[in-house]
View 1 (cartoon, helix red, strand yellow):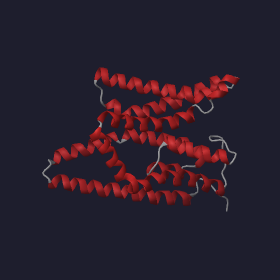
View 2 (cartoon, rainbow, N blue to C red):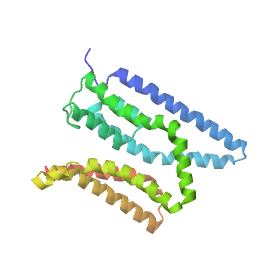
View 3 (cartoon, rainbow, N blue to C red):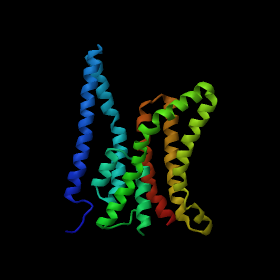
View 4 (cartoon, one colour):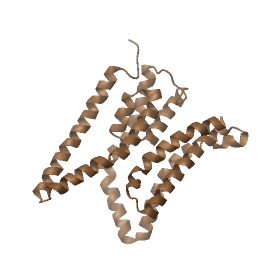
Length: 245
């Protein structure tokens, strides 16, 4: 039997997992609704909260759809759909898939067909690594939180510096991926500029969104800034690639 990244059995397996996650969401939604009524919250207020939450889930949903489309070219629909419906993000999933494919001599975005062995390898790289964070939370989460609280109680300034340093360290890891081929620019290989310029376009869109929120108090833009910057960044990659290739 020939392997396919869009095999019906893969859709079935992914659908089962996604259905379980959706079931959990519905369960906790019902629990929250009942709890709200039990503590005396007005029914109209509960409805307004539910509708507002539903509307603003559209923003991250757009980013997820874009991510699935981006990864589907190489990996088919079921795997990206599963990963991005449970625990995952475009930045991590793309890097993990790219690294796995590179190790097998493949180029991300240029793969026409994967063997079953290659597919399983990519799945393991994309899932096992990110699950480490889930395993570590019950092991070190409480101690880490207690340490941060103690540091904040002793010295608020150093606590802020420490938290910001950890965040910057995480961002730096992704920036390294963006700039990894930049040195080729000095040799006349301009392809290394493509991810840098795409990132710059997305960053400018985010800055513009922040400026609009600050100037005109359009708070709703904050919820849609990420998918908008993703879309514009991806669209800009087409003319930028044609220009530099």
